[in-house]
Image 1 (cartoon, rainbow, N blue to C red):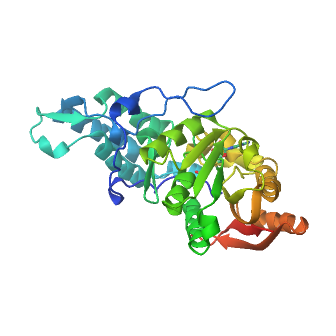
Image 2: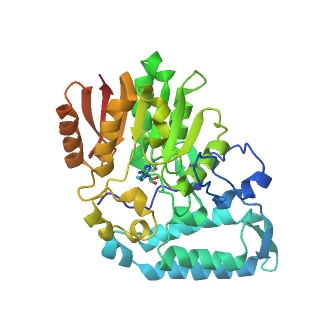
Image 3: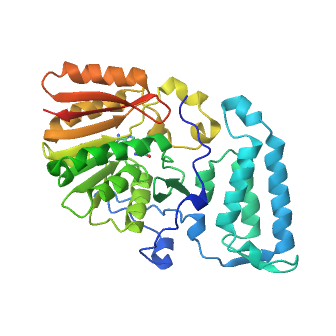
Length: 361
Ligand SMILES: C[S@@+](CC[C@H](N)C(=O)[O-])C[C@H]1O[C@@H](n2cnc3c(N)ncnc32)[C@H](O)[C@@H]1O
């Protein structure tokens, strides 16, 4: 099963992001700007590394917590690996180091046991968060509230899928296609099922300062709120329009006008959900995972919609669960004679046939 979590987070691989709005607004309750009939208020969680360092604790208490957290991590051994291919204790110890780096402002400033260390959460919350990580198998990215993805640091929380490394390739695919085609570069793109906004934000950046823009949709109000927050942090509000609703439903004004369409929809067959790694199956939203009996429900719907919504020459890229779904999707698209051309299946980093791409006739 593809969906596992583990090694993607590494705080020092990427520069810290320029904040384009203040902590005042980061911390306030946040309303999705989606044109929904009953507006939903969701408060996106501020990633741990961005929280103000307003707590302090004695160095000896921090060391005591660290010894306890390390002991808990070591006690796991390879139990989770054996049960569902989850993290082993060395992975948990690596995460513990990253967690410390996000939670503690500057540990090196304190050298004596009774000196104070400045932190972004209080010491009780450190205990509680690490218990959640190890005992409840809460994904590390939800514990620290963010995921490093390409050159972005995206806020994530319960209710929003943690973006996966292989999905990054969709951005490279789009980047290649628009670099050769001015019409696509300056057109309107859609990212359906945007989740944290990972694809929409990256494609917005790929389109650059020319006319191109992105519409990103999601059925989940939490996803729309978190994606809105991420879009604002990257100052892309003028480039990316977030809309709440099911697939193409919020795009009625764009029929036959889209230059490009991308989606990483839910594609796990329903019967496989119970076998997923606990971090995924217990904590990530079922709405983001479950693709129905064969896992193809959303993909087939997207295919039908692409034929209606893309303009002639418009491009699409869909992520799938693997070779079987890729083949089924290509067969389905070929059966819609005259709708699509240059259909291709592309592999991910691991060599798994993962993406179906093509153009609208
Ligand atoms: C696999 S996740 C992908 C999220 C994000 N694009 C990414 O790659 O990280 C699928 C997304 O589709 C959304 N979704 C599920 N059903 C939907 C629907 N009917 N309409 C729009 N979005 C939907 C989920 O809420 C979730 O955010």
